[in-house]
Amino acid sequence: MSKNTLRLLGVLSVGAAALALRNSKGSGVPNCPDIKIGEDQQLAGVRFQEVMKGGASPGDAVPIVFAFHSRGNSPSQYSKSGSMSAIGPARMIIPYGIYSSQDLNGGSADSYHFFPSGIKNIINNNSESEVLEIFSTTSRWFEPFAKAIVRCRPSPPDRRPVFTGSSMGAQMAYLMNSTMPGFAGLTVAVNGYLPRPFWNSNISPQAALHGRSDTTVPYNWDKEYNETIISQGAPATFVPYDAGHGLTKTMSSDWQSFIRNYISGA
Image (cartoon, rainbow, N blue to C red; front, side, top):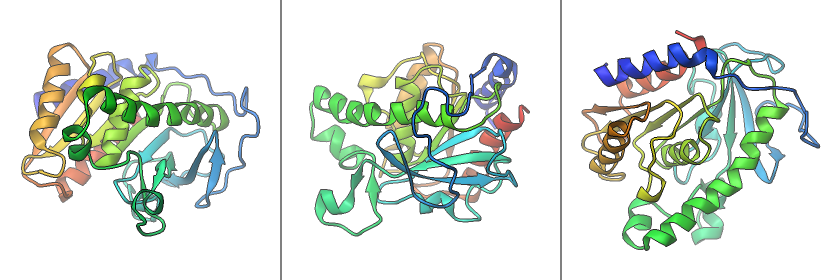
């Protein structure tokens, strides 16, 4: 791993004790849903699924991982038994995107999006103020849910949640880390990008993994974003790979390692 990667891991290790989060199950949240592993649930206007990883049981106080699916996908991307199997004991919360393909373009069922179109289309065909509103709409929709889940589910007091995802899911992870500073303990974004209006260094520790040959979510866009906030003092790292928009085995392994190291306090 690069020096920036090692620096981020140091930040995570040293700062873990300071990342305290109050967890009083159900406190202040009416109608906390019962835990129903692998089934659709609803809370604060967001439909989601819940999956336990690393041998954890539903009632265990384990770290919460908000896993955002890619464009046109669904929670099934992460709810499969072998998906993200190496992150260690965790409670994975997997929301459905705010938009369905059927509503957007008459597409297939069980296909969802966090934003109304792909990132290049949004950036290239909208003004900065329009981009700001598109992404802010999704952020405002998700933030109450994230806070409610943390109050409704047991988790360790020294491990804030994780935001993670790839492609459109990575954009979602970036967005929530930017708009909810201090909420997450770690964000891991794979082949993603965050629009310029949301760039800031006031974020929780963040790792970005990106394929150099990616043209779906342009590599250089993500590189510029991360290099800019790093130069401003953000606790972030950017790791390039010899890959396109798809995941290589190395990328997948590193992605899970970042999460596992944070969860375990390594």
